[in-house]
Image 1 (cartoon, rainbow, N blue to C red):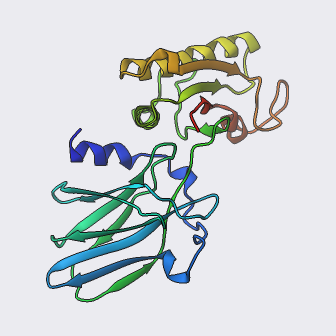
Image 2 (image 1 turned 120 degrees about the vertical axis):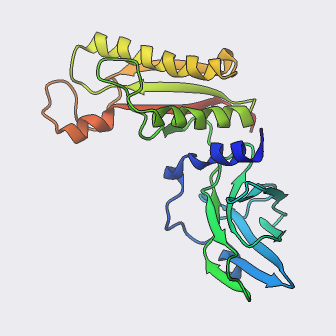
Length: 255
């Protein structure tokens, strides 16, 4: 896969796991800064990655720094204290993202070296989230057409492609794909419809090269609502939409 494809495949990774007001990592105060500096025409970027849940630094993160103007990519790794340092030559805008087995991709951090003439500090840090066995994760904005297995928006396939990237980078993971409906309509019909939708997602991943033995598709129908909207309960459209969802859960995973 070339650098452009790598960068594009990371653009759509699950931003819901990384709130913009993430707490600072543990350690010295300066560890929460991304440092940008210039010396004799060479630009240097220094920063750190931390676990968004424990706030501890994360070592061994593959840091991908991409020049968004020409797709030139530089790859380095974080050290034992979660830090990285990279030298860059071109004056440009760079996208920084971190990847590591058993973790979700980090949010993308854009930095510009345009017009640098001295050291700059940005009050930020780069979180990265570990994938937890047994926990369900919502695939946001993956919506199906009414009473159909077809995805209503092409962007929905980008969401499934995110799942493909997780599976590709973690070959020991086995996933359950769970699809849920709201409570409107016949119970058995909703159960069957959700199963067909789950099968569609699993087949899409299998067609991209994921072994079917790593995928377990389950349609839950309306049996697991996230709110009070069960049969005969009057609810708003927004409340029904909350129950129409697709999730994934790691069921096997070498820790």
